[in-house]
Length: 196
Image (tube, rainbow, N blue to C red):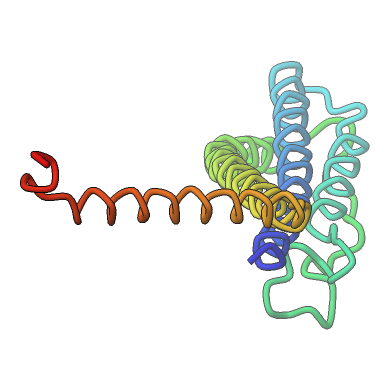
């Protein structure tokens, strides 16, 4: 039983580590999206896009790194397709010049709308991930507590002083025999013997 509880605890630690990795990468996507959104809003508001290309490329690199992040078993977000990285594009082609055209401005507005629409979903996923982390931590703690309790019970039984136990048992048997003897003597008494 102790080994079973220890295995539950170890599994909870592995799951907790994986969920922590999910959390870190989801937060990276969230923060990169929010920063990119701010840069796009600035470009739309000022009509100037100096540095926007670098911001887009930086956000893309962070997205790619977060989506392709992994642990010792492979990419975290690859699902069942573990033979290749889940997010394949390597670079973004130049998408915006220093002064955006009307079409590029519309594309920026569309991108900002898409980011606004996607961020609540990313945050909801992160919240669910946090709930699972808390649940996993609770299960791991319970398994550790049960393993410790079982180990303590085993230790108490293994550490028992057999000499003391034998002495106590012998003493209790002597007391029991004495009580049987007294009971037998009292049972054999009758009122006629008492009146004699």
